[in-house]
Length: 354
Image (cartoon, helix red, strand yellow):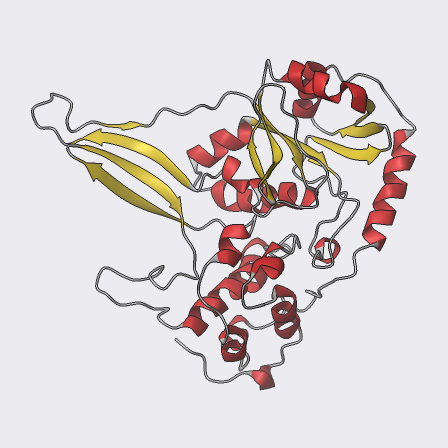
């Protein structure tokens, strides 16, 4: 690991130099919200924010992505041929990603880079990307990252971790990809003493986090008994099935494949989907195994807080960014649901629903 100092006066100059080798993305102000976008020439990411409304997961996993193109024109010799849509997997860098969003890529990677099945589109985009993180010194009251396997200075999934240090940024170069980006940007001022500054800032940032969750009992709780717990109707009562929680979540990975045909040309698209939508599990027969709102809400929380834990023998499928808490229009709070699930006792179970 290399420790560097980056003079803020040379910040723009370094990004401009790196842009010769990388397509740059970062958080920019868009009306009253920040979102991750491709940076135009000379544009710098706005690092004076806590978190974007949507996570930057769409830079690796686009909300809508054409993957196959084909022709239905029988007069053409190649009308039966399907071809992969042209894509740009040249080097790119996401500058200013928060540690929680970088950690989320590692959880999502478990799904798209499984031993037996690999998603080539997600993997190519991921491998082409360098992640330049910005530590979070001002967590919100809804952030609970430190008890969700993450933290404001967590380095998982990052190639470089930066922190604000007055007139400078301090940077930890964590991987070879990070070193390559630092070289391209001309960041080469070594600062070994930065290690102490990072540790002090990390401790200070973590001390500001006032929200926590407990997950210690989730792995040991019987899945079927938890599935039949009596609190699910109450949890789901206010839900609108709008999907805000899943679309804003950096770890939600559900998608649908859809063919779109115009005239005699067609494309196959990969689109985000949500377990909150009523038609998410509708079969071609018309049968829907999750036809009620309670069943869909239960699926969301069971997936994140129980199925994922059991399948991967790891922590929960959540990094504590708090987006779903802040944006839910009816104030459904994953922290409360996690508390109910973690403190569940079999006596609380009722007959399982659907």
